[in-house]
Amino acid sequence: MGSVRHISDREIASVLTTDDFVASCDKAFRLYGQGEMVNPARAESIRREGDMDLFRLELPGEWTGKFRGRKVIEERSDVETGRLGERTAVIELEDVQTGDRVLLDAEHVTNMR
Image (cartoon, rainbow, N blue to C red; front, side, top):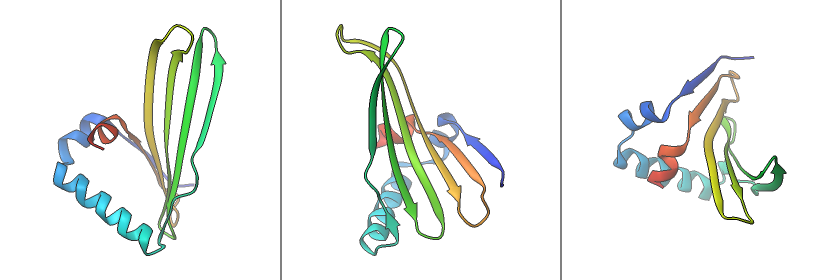
């Protein structure tokens, strides 16, 4: 098993420019079109947790032979009253050759999108 590194939203915001973000999205779409990037169906679930509803969304993806990843978003709210709770978003990446993993806070990236 490889190493695990966490990269915060603050670190991402300090180095990721809008141009970098657009270029990376463009590359991902091109890789997808060439069949090198795989984007399986997302998985959604909702369950009651205490006095809140927990909505969980998992968006998997893989750059075949290089990286496997998924974005996980969890939101807590009370559907009946409309009360909003906390929201978390993280991107989990794994280098398939080394097993090294990177956990990225995904709020900044999500907001850029």
